[in-house]
Amino acid sequence: MGIISSSFVRNCWYVAGFSHDFPADRIESRKIAGDPVVLYRRSDGHLAALADRCAHRHAPLSLGRIEGDDLRCMYHGLKFSPDGTCVEIPGQDRIPDRSCVRSYPLVEKGGWVWIWMGHSDACDPGLIPPVCDFDDPEWVQSSGQLDYEAPYELINDNLLDLSHLAFVHADSFGATTGWSDRQPRHMLLDRGIRVERWIEAAPPIPPLPQLSASDTVDIRSCYEFHIPGIFLMRTSFHRTGAAKAANWGDPVDEELFAHYSCQSVTPIDMRRSRTLFSWGPGAAFGDRAMAQQMIAMADHAFREDKVIIEAQFANLDEESGVPMLATQADKPLTIFRGIMQKARNRERDGSVAEAAQAAVPTEVPPMAQAS
Ligand code: FES
Ligand SMILES: [Fe+2]
Image (cartoon, rainbow, N blue to C red; front, side):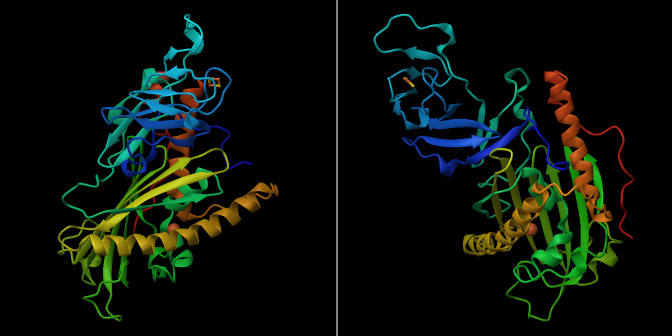
């Protein structure tokens, strides 16, 4: 199938979960980019991640037992340290070198858990995308999660083309065709793309209690999308007319309201994906109760995405041979797909260190400009 890649970008940080998904004394299993992974907290509270497959006869270590810092397989009792070294084989003194399991680098930061699925020599915490920490004083954030029976690339595509809001989310978000009738500006980042747009004289998303139902705002929506599927969106509301006053660039009018959302797309395997998301108001504009209302709204809206994306995947699965039609709105996702393909190519070509570096395409389609 042409638009679904046959491999993952591996030299990058995927979101394995939120910190609160991994309480002490609990063993969690995840499948990430096709790899079964077991995660648990060491006695000092740091998370460890190992291949969820015992070196002995491949039983899942997630059915094992935490012993201090180590994890014991509860089939025949092999014990592994957090770096994957086998430290005990019941009934024998000699521990062969190859009895280890793979360990994965992990970084836990601001409530997000990042896992490096690629070559350990290329691992660089500096490449973690700048998501909003849950303890960031500027924003109040709540969180959610949704799984898709669809490849992660289709979800990336969805987030890279917000013109779909006007159609998929017309009821849930009350989005108007203002989201689709003007092309956004976009620019390349080191490992992704930035997309900026104005939606003029539109109902606010989420609705603002201080406005009557007939009041509109100009919405400034800017997001970055980073390898491998990290979406960071800042949105602000301004008086109607603010877009024109700003010449459709950075706002010059005051913010009536602002909100921030981070969303991650993590492939489970080639056909399934997990999204984790945060959303909430600026601390100057709302509180935790508002953030929770917004997350409930997002959860409802993302289930609308899930319906159309899974149905799209079912169609793609039939491999009709009919080519897709490209539109102007496809530009950001086409560019991002180029960035991802270049990263895949570098990994395939074996340049481990280079693969982790900026992976921008050398040739970029012309930028669409807001008119
Ligand atoms: S399968 Fe794990 S100890 Fe045998
Ligand atoms: Fe959507």
